[in-house]
Amino acid sequence: MQQAVVSIIAGTDAGFLNSYIYPGLSLHQELAIFSDYGLTPLQTLQSATIAGPKFLGKTQQFTSLEVGKVADIIILARNPLVDIRNTQSLQGVISHNRYYNKKALEHLKLQAKQFVSSQ
Image (cartoon, rainbow, N blue to C red; front, side, top):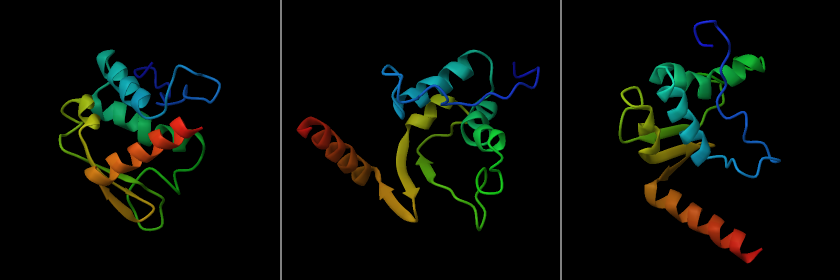
């Protein structure tokens, strides 16, 4: 499909009606599958960051780190261009102009688990 220039967009099967696909971990698994079946790590990353906005006509708002564009940034310990599974080496996130280190992310995850278990 990649060679035929078919747009491959990661994460498109994580809809609310699919109770077996969970946003977050499943995206990392999907990226690994793309890589295992022939996409380069760069093509795989592009499927998760550029292809969706391009398909939706939103490249002026997303797809790169530039003044005036919307972006969250993940900070990794290892290079995903070497091995796409390195997307799971999360060290920090910048979201909505706020930095979350690994400890803060673990705290957010704990809060989410507590919220879910209280429902």
